[in-house]
Length: 567
Image (cartoon, rainbow, N blue to C red; front, side):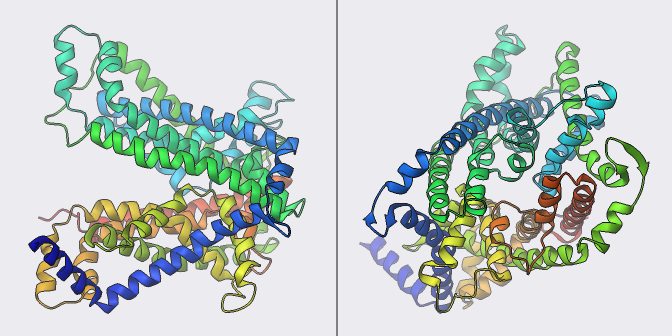
């Protein structure tokens, strides 16, 4: 009875706070309008025609041989990339956690490799692959004297996506391996088991849920990827590129919507398995931290081959990224290797580079603080507050992680160029800069929210309760107590949102209008035309901007963050 009365008093106190109630109402409206509504419109477009509810649209697209082929192609690429990325990520994580590295060089290479995919546009490796292994590639043409090699198609996509996504698996699995209690493995070693036996019978079973989690995350990223298949896929169609061509080439909005629903169903199914089964199972298997320090492997028969494999892989990835600035400095890649700055000059003189960088920078700069603040507010509500719609806010904010950019782009086209907002308050949203900012926010929201939830769970609730007891309202407590305590997470979310926004391509390529020039769209356009010098010049400047942003954030956190060391 006392518990029910206490809960009722908490609810009364909660609803008596107008700032809190208003914030929740605005959040629910935002998430419903810009995440659920576009997806609902896709479903309506797919199932409802002038004749009412029907499956005719799905029958029509399933009758298309290119669409059926695209589904098969997408699943084949996704499974192979997921398996390869998880295995390579496990190799890197195992070497870092279990192997005694004789040189700091390998540790430095690991850090570089893990950060490069974060700060670079999603299609940089596709450009590098073409420049190194294509018909005019330095390795194929000049080192191996192969003049008719084609990197386009299935294997091109698989290799590029694996190199792009395996660092994500490496970062996930590194944390899991660090949390394994060393005494479990040492007990097996004391009983005479070999290193390989210990790994297969103790270590691997403990991280198997985490390995499955890494596979599914990569699988979702792979099948949702638009940029790499668009540049290096050639005639090998995937679902993301087929949807794009259906709306831009065939002008079939209804067919594209139905295709988008099929892709969304696949990613949602995988996301639900990953989020609510494997992630929870992984957490349950590895709870807490290791009880004591791990004895690192020093046997050269183990350390030498594993370290060599990791070093070669890391150097190859770095080589791929180095190709991009060199591609912008050579007169004609593959034929004339004299150094020149003409491509950089043409970016600004001939191809409106200043406008492209200004538009991309301003839109991303507006979106990133809004994203970071929204992420922290959602995290605060999920972790620190109890109210009926909490589960809805958490689920919908995370849902954007499972929605491929192409699907979201189609949803926004159908939802805001027509739908219920064809006239009225949001009539002018489609085609404006505001819709691009909203897409940037929605795409980056899950990453910031997950980071915020992790940070807030480490804060004792008594710190905030004392502020409430002194008469502060929820807004003042959040701004003066909670936010300063999680400012590292806030700053990290801010820069991550900026980097993700300025390097985004899959959703915005369908929504951008001639009024705006965005860097990623320009890179994609020139890469498709084979103008690699211009594409590399744009990409080099973009990488410099994103890398500088991350370095500035790290410096700021080092000197002003909550985690800085004090004398």
